[in-house]
Image (cartoon, rainbow, N blue to C red):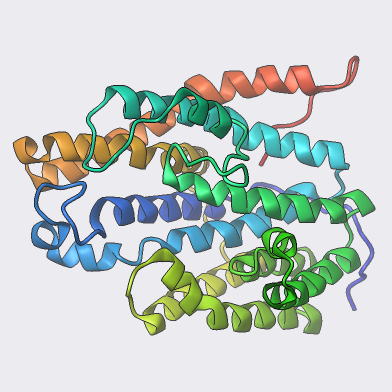
Length: 361
Protein backbone atom coordinates (compact mmCIF):
# COMPACT_ATOMS: atom_id res chain seq x y z
CA UNK A 1 0.00 0.00 0.00
CA UNK A 2 1.35 3.42 -0.94
CA UNK A 3 2.41 5.53 2.01
CA UNK A 4 0.32 8.66 2.55
CA UNK A 5 3.28 10.55 4.02
CA UNK A 6 4.85 13.36 2.08
CA UNK A 7 7.97 12.14 0.34
CA UNK A 8 10.51 13.64 -1.99
CA UNK A 9 9.56 12.89 -5.56
CA UNK A 10 11.27 14.34 -8.56
CA UNK A 11 8.85 16.34 -10.66
CA UNK A 12 10.43 16.83 -14.08
CA UNK A 13 8.54 18.94 -16.56
CA UNK A 14 5.72 16.96 -18.16
CA UNK A 15 6.14 18.04 -21.77
CA UNK A 16 2.74 16.89 -22.98
CA UNK A 17 1.07 19.36 -20.62
CA UNK A 18 2.79 22.19 -22.50
CA UNK A 19 1.30 20.98 -25.78
CA UNK A 20 -2.14 20.68 -24.20
CA UNK A 21 -1.89 24.23 -22.87
CA UNK A 22 -1.27 25.53 -26.38
CA UNK A 23 -4.09 23.40 -27.77
CA UNK A 24 -6.44 24.84 -25.14
CA UNK A 25 -5.32 28.40 -25.94
CA UNK A 26 -5.80 27.89 -29.69
CA UNK A 27 -9.28 26.49 -29.13
CA UNK A 28 -10.21 29.67 -27.23
CA UNK A 29 -8.68 31.75 -30.04
CA UNK A 30 -10.87 30.03 -32.64
CA UNK A 31 -13.88 30.40 -30.37
CA UNK A 32 -13.44 34.17 -30.16
CA UNK A 33 -12.65 34.55 -33.85
CA UNK A 34 -15.26 32.23 -35.36
CA UNK A 35 -18.00 31.18 -32.95
CA UNK A 36 -20.11 34.32 -32.99
CA UNK A 37 -23.30 34.31 -35.06
CA UNK A 38 -23.17 38.10 -35.53
CA UNK A 39 -20.88 40.17 -37.71
CA UNK A 40 -18.12 40.90 -35.18
CA UNK A 41 -15.24 40.45 -35.88
CA UNK A 42 -16.21 39.91 -39.54
CA UNK A 43 -18.26 42.28 -41.70
CA UNK A 44 -20.13 39.17 -42.82
CA UNK A 45 -21.01 36.42 -40.37
CA UNK A 46 -18.59 33.64 -39.47
CA UNK A 47 -21.42 31.21 -40.24
CA UNK A 48 -21.39 32.40 -43.82
CA UNK A 49 -17.62 32.58 -44.20
CA UNK A 50 -16.62 29.41 -42.33
CA UNK A 51 -19.71 27.16 -42.11
CA UNK A 52 -17.92 23.97 -41.00
CA UNK A 53 -15.20 25.55 -38.87
CA UNK A 54 -17.78 27.79 -37.21
CA UNK A 55 -19.59 24.76 -35.79
CA UNK A 56 -16.37 23.28 -34.43
CA UNK A 57 -15.21 26.63 -33.01
CA UNK A 58 -18.44 26.86 -31.04
CA UNK A 59 -16.96 24.33 -28.63
CA UNK A 60 -13.66 26.20 -28.31
CA UNK A 61 -14.62 27.68 -24.95
CA UNK A 62 -13.99 24.21 -23.52
CA UNK A 63 -10.31 25.13 -23.70
CA UNK A 64 -10.92 27.15 -20.53
CA UNK A 65 -12.19 24.01 -18.81
CA UNK A 66 -8.99 22.20 -19.80
CA UNK A 67 -6.91 25.14 -18.52
CA UNK A 68 -8.56 24.86 -15.10
CA UNK A 69 -8.01 21.09 -14.94
CA UNK A 70 -4.36 21.44 -15.94
CA UNK A 71 -4.00 24.25 -13.42
CA UNK A 72 -5.18 22.02 -10.56
CA UNK A 73 -2.59 19.42 -11.57
CA UNK A 74 0.30 21.85 -12.08
CA UNK A 75 -0.34 23.98 -8.99
CA UNK A 76 -0.47 20.92 -6.78
CA UNK A 77 2.74 19.61 -8.38
CA UNK A 78 4.69 22.87 -8.24
CA UNK A 79 3.67 23.78 -4.68
CA UNK A 80 4.54 20.42 -3.11
CA UNK A 81 7.04 20.98 -0.32
CA UNK A 82 7.03 24.77 -0.78
CA UNK A 83 6.44 27.42 1.85
CA UNK A 84 3.53 29.82 1.53
CA UNK A 85 5.94 32.60 0.55
CA UNK A 86 7.53 30.44 -2.15
CA UNK A 87 4.08 29.44 -3.42
CA UNK A 88 2.87 33.01 -3.85
CA UNK A 89 6.16 34.24 -5.26
CA UNK A 90 6.01 31.55 -7.95
CA UNK A 91 2.40 32.47 -8.79
CA UNK A 92 3.22 36.18 -9.00
CA UNK A 93 6.23 35.52 -11.22
CA UNK A 94 4.18 33.28 -13.49
CA UNK A 95 1.07 35.43 -13.84
CA UNK A 96 1.86 39.11 -13.47
CA UNK A 97 4.71 40.11 -15.82
CA UNK A 98 2.86 38.94 -18.94
CA UNK A 99 -0.46 40.12 -17.56
CA UNK A 100 0.82 43.66 -17.00
CA UNK A 101 2.17 43.74 -20.55
CA UNK A 102 -1.14 42.44 -21.91
CA UNK A 103 -3.18 45.05 -20.01
CA UNK A 104 -1.01 47.86 -21.40
CA UNK A 105 -1.11 46.47 -24.94
CA UNK A 106 -4.87 45.93 -24.82
CA UNK A 107 -5.41 49.43 -23.46
CA UNK A 108 -3.31 50.97 -26.24
CA UNK A 109 -5.17 48.89 -28.81
CA UNK A 110 -8.50 50.00 -27.35
CA UNK A 111 -7.57 53.67 -27.31
CA UNK A 112 -5.53 53.95 -30.51
CA UNK A 113 -6.55 51.01 -32.69
CA UNK A 114 -9.66 50.25 -34.78
CA UNK A 115 -12.89 50.31 -32.79
CA UNK A 116 -15.46 47.55 -33.09
CA UNK A 117 -19.18 48.50 -32.99
CA UNK A 118 -20.53 49.26 -29.53
CA UNK A 119 -17.09 49.35 -27.93
CA UNK A 120 -16.21 51.98 -25.34
CA UNK A 121 -12.66 53.24 -24.91
CA UNK A 122 -10.64 51.99 -21.97
CA UNK A 123 -10.00 54.69 -19.38
CA UNK A 124 -6.67 55.18 -17.63
CA UNK A 125 -8.30 54.43 -14.28
CA UNK A 126 -9.75 51.22 -15.65
CA UNK A 127 -6.34 50.16 -16.92
CA UNK A 128 -4.62 50.92 -13.61
CA UNK A 129 -7.20 48.97 -11.62
CA UNK A 130 -6.94 46.05 -14.05
CA UNK A 131 -3.21 45.88 -13.31
CA UNK A 132 -4.04 44.58 -9.82
CA UNK A 133 -5.95 41.59 -11.27
CA UNK A 134 -8.55 42.42 -8.59
CA UNK A 135 -10.67 44.66 -10.79
CA UNK A 136 -13.62 42.26 -11.01
CA UNK A 137 -14.41 42.21 -7.27
CA UNK A 138 -13.80 45.97 -7.26
CA UNK A 139 -16.56 46.38 -9.85
CA UNK A 140 -14.30 47.62 -12.66
CA UNK A 141 -14.76 46.28 -16.20
CA UNK A 142 -12.15 44.07 -17.80
CA UNK A 143 -9.79 45.72 -20.25
CA UNK A 144 -10.16 42.41 -22.11
CA UNK A 145 -12.97 40.01 -21.23
CA UNK A 146 -10.63 36.99 -21.23
CA UNK A 147 -9.28 38.21 -17.88
CA UNK A 148 -12.30 36.75 -16.06
CA UNK A 149 -10.50 33.40 -15.82
CA UNK A 150 -7.62 34.98 -13.90
CA UNK A 151 -9.94 35.97 -11.05
CA UNK A 152 -11.14 32.34 -10.93
CA UNK A 153 -7.50 31.20 -10.79
CA UNK A 154 -6.66 33.67 -8.02
CA UNK A 155 -9.49 32.34 -5.87
CA UNK A 156 -8.21 28.80 -6.38
CA UNK A 157 -4.74 29.92 -5.28
CA UNK A 158 -6.22 31.67 -2.25
CA UNK A 159 -8.01 28.63 -0.86
CA UNK A 160 -5.18 26.24 -1.83
CA UNK A 161 -2.90 28.48 0.21
CA UNK A 162 -4.43 26.88 3.31
CA UNK A 163 -2.93 23.53 2.31
CA UNK A 164 0.44 25.09 1.51
CA UNK A 165 0.42 26.90 4.85
CA UNK A 166 -0.18 23.65 6.74
CA UNK A 167 2.30 21.73 4.60
CA UNK A 168 1.56 19.65 1.52
CA UNK A 169 0.97 15.95 2.04
CA UNK A 170 -1.31 13.39 0.46
CA UNK A 171 -3.70 13.39 3.41
CA UNK A 172 -4.03 17.16 3.65
CA UNK A 173 -4.55 17.62 -0.08
CA UNK A 174 -7.06 14.78 -0.32
CA UNK A 175 -8.98 16.22 2.65
CA UNK A 176 -8.85 19.63 1.01
CA UNK A 177 -10.46 18.18 -2.15
CA UNK A 178 -13.25 16.45 -0.23
CA UNK A 179 -14.00 19.56 1.83
CA UNK A 180 -13.89 21.85 -1.22
CA UNK A 181 -16.23 19.56 -3.14
CA UNK A 182 -18.72 19.51 -0.27
CA UNK A 183 -18.36 23.22 0.35
CA UNK A 184 -18.96 24.05 -3.31
CA UNK A 185 -22.18 22.02 -3.17
CA UNK A 186 -23.42 23.82 -0.05
CA UNK A 187 -22.20 27.33 -0.90
CA UNK A 188 -24.94 28.32 -3.39
CA UNK A 189 -27.67 27.49 -0.86
CA UNK A 190 -25.87 29.07 2.10
CA UNK A 191 -27.00 32.61 1.38
CA UNK A 192 -23.44 33.79 2.01
CA UNK A 193 -22.13 35.50 -1.16
CA UNK A 194 -18.55 35.57 0.14
CA UNK A 195 -18.57 31.78 0.57
CA UNK A 196 -19.80 31.28 -2.98
CA UNK A 197 -17.18 33.69 -4.27
CA UNK A 198 -14.35 31.88 -2.50
CA UNK A 199 -15.40 28.33 -3.38
CA UNK A 200 -16.21 29.01 -7.07
CA UNK A 201 -18.76 26.15 -7.26
CA UNK A 202 -19.21 26.45 -11.02
CA UNK A 203 -15.55 25.69 -11.74
CA UNK A 204 -14.35 23.80 -8.66
CA UNK A 205 -14.87 20.28 -10.13
CA UNK A 206 -12.21 20.93 -12.78
CA UNK A 207 -9.58 22.09 -10.28
CA UNK A 208 -10.41 19.21 -7.94
CA UNK A 209 -10.02 16.74 -10.81
CA UNK A 210 -6.62 18.18 -11.69
CA UNK A 211 -5.44 17.94 -8.08
CA UNK A 212 -6.70 14.35 -7.79
CA UNK A 213 -4.88 13.40 -10.99
CA UNK A 214 -1.64 14.75 -9.54
CA UNK A 215 -2.14 12.61 -6.43
CA UNK A 216 -2.45 9.67 -8.82
CA UNK A 217 0.76 10.81 -10.51
CA UNK A 218 2.67 10.74 -7.21
CA UNK A 219 1.32 7.30 -6.35
CA UNK A 220 1.87 5.91 -9.82
CA UNK A 221 -1.60 4.35 -9.82
CA UNK A 222 -5.22 4.97 -8.99
CA UNK A 223 -6.36 4.05 -5.50
CA UNK A 224 -9.83 3.93 -4.05
CA UNK A 225 -9.70 7.48 -2.69
CA UNK A 226 -8.23 9.17 -5.75
CA UNK A 227 -10.63 7.26 -7.97
CA UNK A 228 -13.45 8.49 -5.73
CA UNK A 229 -12.27 12.09 -5.99
CA UNK A 230 -12.07 11.91 -9.78
CA UNK A 231 -15.50 10.27 -9.97
CA UNK A 232 -17.04 12.86 -7.63
CA UNK A 233 -15.57 15.74 -9.61
CA UNK A 234 -16.93 14.23 -12.84
CA UNK A 235 -20.41 13.79 -11.35
CA UNK A 236 -20.44 17.36 -10.03
CA UNK A 237 -19.14 18.58 -13.39
CA UNK A 238 -21.91 16.91 -15.40
CA UNK A 239 -24.51 18.34 -13.02
CA UNK A 240 -23.13 21.87 -13.35
CA UNK A 241 -22.39 21.67 -17.07
CA UNK A 242 -25.77 23.15 -18.13
CA UNK A 243 -25.11 26.14 -15.86
CA UNK A 244 -21.61 26.51 -17.28
CA UNK A 245 -23.00 26.39 -20.82
CA UNK A 246 -25.69 28.95 -19.93
CA UNK A 247 -23.08 31.16 -18.29
CA UNK A 248 -21.02 30.99 -21.47
CA UNK A 249 -24.16 32.01 -23.33
CA UNK A 250 -24.00 29.47 -26.13
CA UNK A 251 -26.79 27.05 -26.97
CA UNK A 252 -24.62 24.06 -27.82
CA UNK A 253 -25.18 20.36 -27.29
CA UNK A 254 -24.80 19.17 -23.69
CA UNK A 255 -23.90 15.61 -24.73
CA UNK A 256 -21.11 16.80 -27.03
CA UNK A 257 -19.68 19.03 -24.29
CA UNK A 258 -19.89 16.22 -21.75
CA UNK A 259 -18.14 13.85 -24.13
CA UNK A 260 -15.38 16.38 -24.83
CA UNK A 261 -14.77 17.01 -21.11
CA UNK A 262 -14.81 13.28 -20.41
CA UNK A 263 -12.06 12.89 -23.02
CA UNK A 264 -10.10 15.55 -21.11
CA UNK A 265 -10.50 13.45 -17.96
CA UNK A 266 -9.19 10.40 -19.83
CA UNK A 267 -6.19 12.32 -21.17
CA UNK A 268 -5.36 13.64 -17.71
CA UNK A 269 -5.67 10.09 -16.39
CA UNK A 270 -3.11 8.90 -18.93
CA UNK A 271 -0.78 11.74 -17.93
CA UNK A 272 -1.25 10.88 -14.25
CA UNK A 273 -0.27 7.26 -14.96
CA UNK A 274 2.78 8.36 -16.96
CA UNK A 275 1.45 6.86 -20.20
CA UNK A 276 2.25 10.01 -22.20
CA UNK A 277 5.70 10.71 -20.75
CA UNK A 278 7.35 9.47 -23.92
CA UNK A 279 6.06 12.51 -25.77
CA UNK A 280 9.11 14.79 -25.52
CA UNK A 281 9.03 16.84 -28.71
CA UNK A 282 11.52 19.68 -28.53
CA UNK A 283 8.98 22.39 -29.37
CA UNK A 284 6.60 21.52 -26.52
CA UNK A 285 8.24 23.76 -23.85
CA UNK A 286 7.96 26.69 -26.26
CA UNK A 287 4.30 25.80 -26.83
CA UNK A 288 3.68 25.91 -23.10
CA UNK A 289 5.53 29.22 -22.74
CA UNK A 290 3.48 31.02 -25.40
CA UNK A 291 0.07 29.61 -24.42
CA UNK A 292 -0.49 32.16 -21.62
CA UNK A 293 0.47 35.31 -23.56
CA UNK A 294 -1.49 34.01 -26.58
CA UNK A 295 -4.56 33.66 -24.39
CA UNK A 296 -4.09 37.13 -22.94
CA UNK A 297 -3.71 39.16 -26.15
CA UNK A 298 -5.44 37.27 -28.96
CA UNK A 299 -8.84 38.87 -28.48
CA UNK A 300 -8.04 42.52 -27.82
CA UNK A 301 -5.52 42.66 -30.68
CA UNK A 302 -6.73 40.03 -33.14
CA UNK A 303 -10.40 40.96 -33.25
CA UNK A 304 -9.54 44.56 -34.16
CA UNK A 305 -7.31 43.49 -37.02
CA UNK A 306 -9.94 41.10 -38.35
CA UNK A 307 -12.64 43.75 -38.14
CA UNK A 308 -10.57 46.40 -39.90
CA UNK A 309 -8.95 44.41 -42.72
CA UNK A 310 -10.80 41.14 -43.36
CA UNK A 311 -12.72 42.52 -46.34
CA UNK A 312 -9.50 43.59 -48.06
CA UNK A 313 -7.54 40.41 -47.25
CA UNK A 314 -10.26 37.79 -47.59
CA UNK A 315 -11.53 35.42 -44.86
CA UNK A 316 -8.97 32.59 -44.92
CA UNK A 317 -5.84 34.76 -45.33
CA UNK A 318 -7.15 36.97 -42.53
CA UNK A 319 -7.87 34.07 -40.16
CA UNK A 320 -4.56 32.30 -40.79
CA UNK A 321 -2.53 35.51 -40.85
CA UNK A 322 -4.01 36.96 -37.67
CA UNK A 323 -3.68 33.66 -35.79
CA UNK A 324 -0.03 33.34 -36.87
CA UNK A 325 0.60 36.96 -35.90
CA UNK A 326 -0.89 36.40 -32.44
CA UNK A 327 1.36 33.36 -31.94
CA UNK A 328 4.36 35.45 -32.96
CA UNK A 329 3.38 38.29 -30.61
CA UNK A 330 2.93 35.74 -27.81
CA UNK A 331 6.43 34.40 -28.43
CA UNK A 332 7.87 37.93 -28.45
CA UNK A 333 6.12 38.73 -25.18
CA UNK A 334 7.61 35.60 -23.66
CA UNK A 335 11.14 36.44 -24.83
CA UNK A 336 11.16 40.24 -24.56
CA UNK A 337 8.87 40.82 -21.57
CA UNK A 338 8.42 37.71 -19.45
CA UNK A 339 12.02 36.52 -19.27
CA UNK A 340 13.74 39.79 -18.30
CA UNK A 341 10.92 41.06 -16.10
CA UNK A 342 10.63 37.75 -14.28
CA UNK A 343 14.40 37.74 -13.62
CA UNK A 344 14.16 41.28 -12.26
CA UNK A 345 11.19 40.48 -10.01
CA UNK A 346 12.86 37.29 -8.79
CA UNK A 347 15.93 39.26 -7.71
CA UNK A 348 13.76 41.84 -5.95
CA UNK A 349 11.73 39.16 -4.17
CA UNK A 350 14.68 36.96 -3.19
CA UNK A 351 15.72 37.17 0.48
CA UNK A 352 18.84 39.27 0.95
CA UNK A 353 21.83 36.96 0.75
CA UNK A 354 19.62 34.03 -0.27
CA UNK A 355 19.50 32.07 -3.47
CA UNK A 356 17.11 32.96 -6.24
CA UNK A 357 14.15 30.68 -6.77
CA UNK A 358 13.83 28.47 -9.80
CA UNK A 359 11.48 29.66 -12.54
CA UNK A 360 7.79 29.19 -11.81
CA UNK A 361 5.98 26.32 -13.50
